[in-house]
Structure formats: C-alpha cells, structure tokens
Image (cartoon, rainbow, N blue to C red):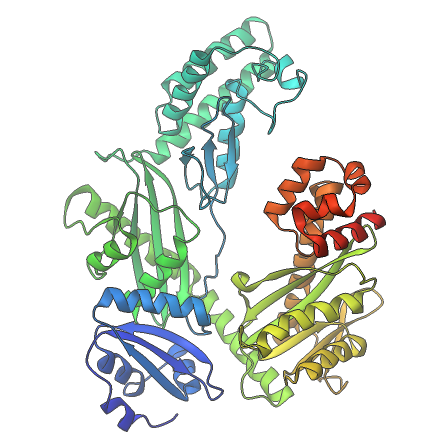
Length: 586
C-alpha cells in the first residue's frame, strides 16, 4: 500500500468527487464526499476488510474534483461512473427489469406485459412493477379472457379465432361502439388499481351460466379464478390513506454487506418487493444513492419515495426531482420498519452463501493470477459466434468482473457479408472490439477468454498484434463431447487446473454464458421472420432504417427485386450494396 500522507494533507475539506486509480492509470473506483479530505483519509487510516481492503491494495493514485454542492458531486460521480465503469463500484447482481402491465391508449386498446418502460409510451396506462412475472401473466390472461379487447398487434383483413370464441369484438371488420370500449377500459383500470367488484361480478355471471349449462369444468376454472383474485388482493392490501404510487426503501448493513429492500406501493396495494445484497465499501449513504440511481434507470420512478433518516432526503429529491419523505411515526413508519426487518432477514438468509461465494471467487482469482503470472485479473471478456441460414454470422461478447457477469457491458455484433466461417467472424469481432481500446474509447480487459484452443488463440493474437495491444489470452478447449477439457495459455501450454476446482467451474461458466448469449441473439433474429432477420444482421441497418424498408417493400421477394437505387433511397449506396449481397444468399 502506498503512503499518501503528503498528498492527503493537500486535499481540501470541500464537497466533490474522487477517482481511485491503479498502477496502469485506470480508474477503479469513483466516489463522492461532503468533505473530500475526511473521506479520502478514511481509506488509508483505518483497519480494512473485505472489498475495501481489496480496493485500497489496488490504489496507486487518486484524483479529485471539487464541486460547489453535494448535489453537484453526486451528479459528477454518476457521470464518471458511467464513463469509466469502475471495477469497485456497485455491480448489480440482479440486473433484471421488472414487467409492467400496459393498457394501450389506442382506438382499439390491447392489454399486454412490457419490460421496456423507459421509452415513450404515448400516455398508455402502466401498472406495476410486478416482481412475480407469473402473477402478471395470469392477470393479463384473465382480463383478456373476460374482456374482448383487441388481441392482434395489427388489424387483420378477416375475423380471427378470438372473435369466434367471444374474446374479441372483431375490430378489424366490425363497427364497435366507442362507449363499449370506454366502459371496458374503465373496469379494467379499476381492477388494476385494486377494485375487483366489477370483474368479480362478471366472472360470477359467467360461472353461473357455465354451471347451468352443466359445463362444470369451466365453472370450476372460473371459481379458481375468483379465489386467485381474493387471495392476491388480500395479500396486497395495505391500510394506507394514499391512492398514488410510491416506493418505500430501507436497508440493513452487516460485516461488509449491504441489504437493500424496496417495497412497491401502488394505489394502496403492495405490488411486490425487491431485495438485493451487495458487497459494500462501508460508505452506506453513497452506495444506496448509487444503487437507487442504477435501479431507477430500468424501473419507472414513482410519484414519491419514502426513505430512512440516515439518507439525505433533500439530495435524493433534488436528484430525482420527486418528493421524498422520512416518516417518523404512524403507519408509514411501521411500513419502513417492516422493510428494515425484511432487509435484515434476507441478509441473515443469504450472508453466509454470499461470503462463501465471494471467498471462492477471490481464491479462484488468486489462483488464476499465479498461473498466468499477472498482477491483476479482475475483468474478463469472452466471445462467441452464431450464424443464420448457414451463412450470416452474428457475434456476442460477455464481460465478467471478478467472475460476476456485468450485463451492462455485453455486446452484440453484426458481421460483414464476406465472412463465411467462424474464424473469420471472430477476427472481425475482435478487431472491432479492441480497435476501440486502441482509440481509448473502452478499457482493456485483464484477460481475454477464448472459446477454443490454438486456432482461436492465434486469431486473437493476430488481431491484438495488428493493433499493438498486449492483453493476456487463455483458451478453453472442449473434447469431442463438447465439454470443456482443459485450459491453454497464449503460449499453448496446458494449465494445471483441476477440473473439480472452483477456478475451472468459474471459467466454464463464462464459456457457457457467451455461448448462450450468441445463440440467444441468433434465435431472437430468426424468430422475427426471414425479412426482418436479414435486416437485423446487415451492418448499417438499425431500427429506423429497418422500419422504413419494411414499410416500403413489405416482403423479401419485393426487396430482392428492388434496384440498388431504390434500396439506396432509404439506406444509402454503401449499405444498399451490402444489403443486396445479403439478399442474394437468402
């Protein structure tokens, strides 16, 4: 550990953001402080354990930027975190986005589940988040059965099955009274806000009708539906005199781990709860703020937040531009205490497992460092390819920090038309990725993990050499049964790694994840249909150009028959040539 005594004496006692750097000058942690000198001294003048100890051992230098207020320092901190993606800042273990139920605000509305809630929804009605995806799907399916909403994405030219089974009003061919649609919307919105009377009456009427017709199987199904509604709403109901949306947040800290609990309250209903336990540096307020900012990048902000008094509510309010409260008594204080108890309970349930996992990962990283004779192996990148129609290749890259997937840094690649094999596809992806490193746009990883042996390692070395980059490489070699057999370094030596070891397990997890990611990209493109698939893999064609092409030509046949000039009107001449080459192969 370096001695920063003299440099620390020069740090001002003002608010600001600080950046810790390793021996290569790479930013490994970004923080903020009300008092920069006090905060920075704390890293070097106290006994350290866990993640903080690892961070301080890696620090070779630090910088700081003074700001005029704590809000400015928070905004600067988040900006720098996004810029540098430092290894020691919070890495969300659970990075999934929760589903919402959307009732579209259209002439003929539809009800569906969505996850991408950040894009413009055109004033559609959104309900959620639903931590229980199954419950959300059951709710949507039930409402769609009871109410004859539009079921198709686009109006068709003839009546479909849903019309004939009385689950659609035949919007494509029939004239539907607007008042009927408004009435349905009103009842559905009322139910999604927790008032179940109208929808329960509808189900009871349908159940009695089925029973009179001796359709006892359907009657039982409808009765179970009623029971589900009663059970769900009973569990969700909270006696609060608040009909608007708010989230309630509390935490529990113990032994270098921070458990964060979020209750989603919507129209007096507890829609669900979210918990995550993160490895902490001990700067609890800053870590909770950073966590909430990352969390609400994927989840809609409620109208209000309720937080414990240890967190600066004015700072949170100013950053998110919403109302933030700290209840001191009453039902909301009791609910805040309940969130604390939940955070504590989750910590007690998972802490031992997390400690064991962290210790195993730390030991595996130490073993890998010794095997490769490296000072640090924190960030690893791995690549895989997949193809469409036996010709069109796509690539995928995954990033792991300390053997934990960093899904925010995963990347997909469209590969040029003249590539006809795996090695050619891999060369293109590697060049495109590490050219950005050469240009200083992205940080180089500590290790590249290739899926394969000498051939794949050679391809990677060739690309890195052409760019003048020195990044360590290993290859994970499979046997004839496609199971990982051994690990090879860039000198083609087989590393002495036991197949039963945690290091072997962690490395094969990276291999499995990159394979899954590339295959999922390939399948997702294929699922969109032939024409859309071709457009998705052509370099230079994004969502906007794809929509314009689909709108103008409508079919693969018409696009194939189009001249270069016709294609170029939408995508330009260079991309038009690439598109023609792809179309020839389909």
